[in-house]
Image (tube, rainbow, N blue to C red):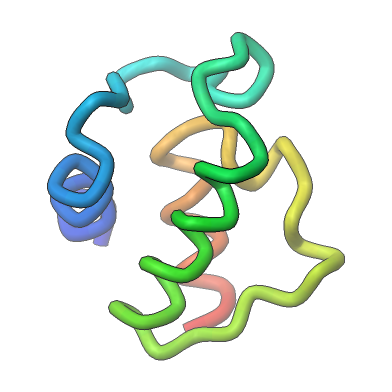
Length: 73
């Protein structure tokens, strides 16, 4: 699943280096990018990401994003 999530993110957000482990903490992802990512992930995986899951910890790395997608699938 991680490979699929990473491929999708790299395709949609080509200017972001997803190899980082502190995407939010280091300011690589801003709020608008996270909203775009939520839309992309929701459409691709048929999930709804609840507001209470939109926290920095869930978007700080590809591993965290993958865990969130798997939990909601």
